[in-house]
Every structure is written in C-alpha cells, then in structure tokens.
Length: 344
Image (cartoon, rainbow, N blue to C red; front, side, top):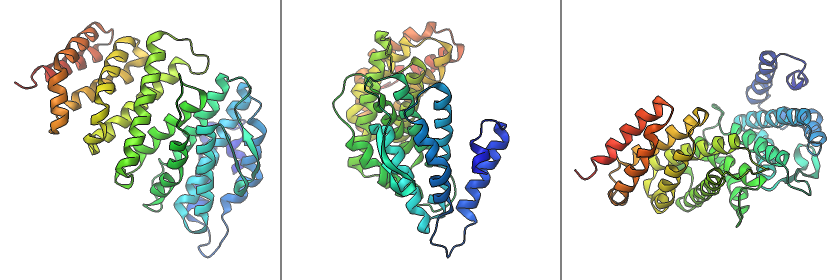
C-alpha cells in the first residue's frame, strides 16, 4: 500500500485511498498489546530512503518525489500519534525531524531510519532550499490537522516542536529559506492547536515571530524586490496564513496582540494597497476582516488604539475603493463605515 501510494504512475485518487488505508491500519488496527509500531517499519524501509535519496538532488521531479515522501512521512507520524501508546515515539520523532528540516535546514532521525545528518541547504542559497523548507513545514502542519485519536495528541506535538521553532529565531534580514518554513510552522500550529495549551509567554513569542515575518514579507512585496529565494505567490500564501493566525489569536486573547497593533495595522494597510491583482484577493479580504474585527472589541486598549488611529485607517482604506475586485470594494466600504462610526 505504501509503495502504491508513493508511485506517481498511479492515479491520484487511488494513491489517496491507499494512503488512507495505511493511516487507518496504523492508527486503529494494530494489536493493543504490541510494543511495536507498524509505521516505524514503513518509514525505515520505504519512506525515509526516498527522502534521503532526494534531499540533495533538487530537480523538479525529485522535489515532487520528495514532497510526496515528506507528506507520507507526516501521515504515518499522525497515525502513530493518534494511536498513542508505544507508537507515540514514532510520531514525536517524525514531528521533530520535520521541524528541524523546516526551521534549520538540517536534521537526523535515527529512530525512523535517518542516521546520517541531512542538510538541505546548499553552499549557495537557492529557491529549491526554500521549497524544501516549505514542504517540510507544510507536512508538519498536516500532522496538526488530523482529527481523531487522543485529545492531547496535538498538544503533545506542539510542546515538542515549539522549542525547536522558537530557538531557531535570530536577527535576520529579508526572508532566508528556512525562515519561510519556520513562519509556516508557527501559523499551522497556532491555527490547529488549542491556545489554552500554550502559555502566555510562549504565545507572545509566537506572535512576535509572526509580526516580524509579516514586516519582512511586506518589505519585499512593496519594494518590488526580486527575491531569488521566495516567489510572490509563496509570500502572499504565507501572508494569508499569518493573518489567519492573527485572527485566531485575537479572538482568543486580544491582549496578546495589543503591543503589536501599531505594527500590524499599518502593515496590513500598506500591503492591501500594494497587492491589487485578483489572485491576491484572499489576502486582501482577510486583511479587511482583521481591521473590521478590531472595531467590535470591548478591550480598553484596543478601543483606545482604534479611536487614536481612526482617521489614518480610513484615509488609507480609501485607496482600495478603486480595486478591480467588486468583492474587495464592497468589503472596504463596510470596514470604512465601521471605523467611521467609532466614538459616535
């Protein structure tokens, strides 16, 4: 089943069905008394050799094969985490490996069959390095988007990988390859994990990471910087995920974002005016949704912020009234109206 699911000679629908069968077997149909994880043999004998063989050779076909293998690695890790018991170790090791590849670009995982350290960063940074980092971050995110199993499985994985993600934070310029993967990891974890399981201090660190990443992304977009490592589509996709993250955190704990509002709001307004293509509509609409959500807050700090910056926000929103998308123009009018009646 694993070999069938990983073969691109087969149809996508049947490959997906085979992968679902593998997940079900590992998560629900192992002997409860067994101290072995069926997924571990699959990883050691089939999946991880593919990852090792394709990590350094970065043609597009090999990247596609690597993407399939990383996604299948995450699927097996998710199934192992859902089963729990002795299989939890397999899920933990998969999550740790994906976090290290995504955030630092290098890792080994002897438990699942990768004994030699893998380094996906070449001597000269390339767009393929960024793609590998993003592939690993996306695969890690899929592990947090699985329903079923122990209610604490996601919290367990989050507590395992968050120290790795936060420890890789450093002072940087622009968006190097591994930074995209790190931001992607943060967004997926926050969006798919109960925030009650994350301490206030750690949540504040995660929000600082997101806001700093937004600033660097916006700088690249607005300056028209032809960044050889990160494409515009990748940036806007990443920005969309980061705004979704801000929306979730704001609904749960407005105070966690209050110190960052002076950076977030101008950044959203600036980027919303810079991205006028229809393909960027999702980002623009989420930006407007965040601005609209601020006006309904009863938090004293947020209310004071909105009243202070009311005129500047409305003035900048007016530039979007000429947007080529009718949906965005209508949303802009609605947001301007809600800001306009603040304090009335």
